[in-house]
Image (tube, rainbow, N blue to C red; front, side, top):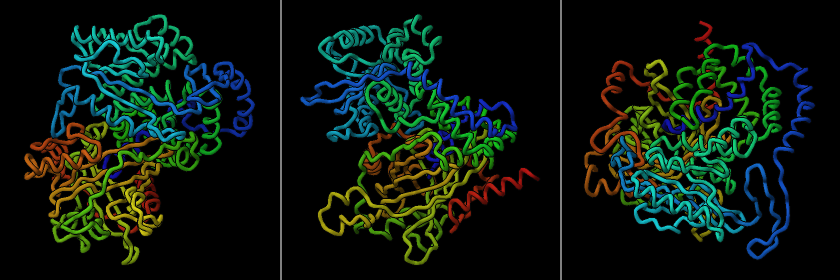
Length: 619
C-alpha cells in the first residue's frame, strides 16, 4: 500500500488461508509422496457426497420476453439466469446520530446522511451485467419516520441503521411484514441491522431461510453445517462482524456478501481463500491437495519456525476482514518463512483461483490544470514528488526527506498505523524515463505494545485515464497514450503482488496540500479496495483550509472520489491522530528510515530483506 491501507490488504487479508495449516499438527510436516498419490482417490466419495448436497436443476423459462435456461441451485436457494439480475437494496435510517467518523474532520453525521451515502456508493462495488450493461445493484435510502407500509415491497435486501425507538420499530416491522408477505412481488431475501438498532429490530434479522429469532433453525444450522440454513446462519454472523465497525466500506461489504450469496454473483467478494462448506467438500480437498503438491517445503518451513507458527495461530483468530488486526499480527511476527509461504500458495500457484478486480468506479476525474497550465507529465511528477529534496522537485518543495505526510484517509488503517510518510522520486533508468519509485514509511504498534517502523517499495508508471476514451481525436484514442496525473503502482509485500490505479484529483499551486485517489487489488488474495488521501508537508490539516473556500475545495475533491469528510480517518481539521504527541515524541527518539531504496526492483529488494532477516534469525 502506498499507505497502510494497501499494506494491510496485501499483508493481511491475503492470509486467512492459514486455517488450512491447522490440518498440520506436526511442526515438521512434509507432504509424503504416498499422501499425494492417494489424495485424488479420496475425492471420489467426496464428490458423491457433494452431489447429494448441491443439486442444480436446469429448465427453460421465459425471461424478459425471451427463452432462457434457468438453473435453480437448491443449496444456495437462488435462481441463476442468463438474463440480467439487479439486486435491489434499501437502507432504512433512524433519526439519531450515527457515531461515524469520530476521528474525521466532520464526526457523528445523522444516520440519514450515512444511509444516503451508502446507497449512493453501493453500485460502484457491484459491477454491471454483461447482458445489457446495467448496474448489478440498485440502492435507495428511507428515513424511518416517513417510511410507508409498502415502501419495502420488491426489495431483495433491507438494512436498518439506528432504528431504536418503539414508534420507529413498529413502523419498520410493519413495512417488513408487508414486503415479506406480498405475493405479487419477489420476496425479501434478507434483513440486516446495525448494532445500534433496538432489540426488537435485531430479532427480525434473517438471511434466506435462517431467522435469528428461531431457536430450531439455529439448532439445525449447528447440527448440519452443509445445509442452506447453516450457510445462511454463517452469512448473518459475517455481517454482524462487519456492521460492528463504523466504516462505510465494511457496511458496504456486509451487503455485498449477502447479495452474492442470495441474489447474484458479485466479483469483488466471489473469491474465497478460506475452506468452507459453501465451497463444497470436493473444492476444499482439491485446494488442500494443490497446496501440498506445490508448496510442501514452504509449509514445512513455516510450521517448523516458532515465530511463523505463532503468526499462523494468531491470524486464524483474527476477525473477518480485520485489516488492522491482521497486519499488526504480520508486523509483530514478520519472518522470511511467512513471506515465502504466502508467495508460494497465493502468488506463484494461485491455489484458490482468486482474481479480485480493480474497481473502475467511481470514475474519478483528473486534475486538469496546475499553476494555470494544463497538467503535463512534468507537472504530474512534480506533484507526487512534492516536498522531497530532489532536483526534479517543484520550486514549491519544502526540501524535506519525504514527499508528503498523510493527514487523513478513507480507511481505519489511518487511525491504527500513524505517521505515514510518502517518498516519491524519479527512476534512474535514463533521463527520458517517466517512471517513479515510491517508498512509504509508517509506524505500527505490535501485539506487545511496541512501536516499530515499516517500509515498502513500489514502482509507479504512467497509465491511460478513462477520460481518453471519451475523446474523439486520433491521438487520444491511441491505446499506447498515457495521461498525465494517472499512475499505476505495483509492489510485492509479504509474498503478495498488489496493483493500484492512482489519480491526482487536486493540488494547490504552492503544494500546501493535494488529494490523491486510489483503486487497487491484491488479485490472488481476492481483495479489492478503493479510497483517497489528503496529504500535506507536515501531516497537519492545512491552516488556510479549516473553514471557508479552502475547506470547501477539499470537500469537493473528496466528493469527486464519492467520499464525504465524515468517512475519513486520521484526524480533524484541528487535531491529528496520525501525528499526535504520543507518536511524534517516540519518533524523536526513534527516527523513521527515510533513506530511499533506489533503483532496485521490487522482487530484488524483497529478496534482500528476506536474506537480511534470515541472517538475523541465525545470529
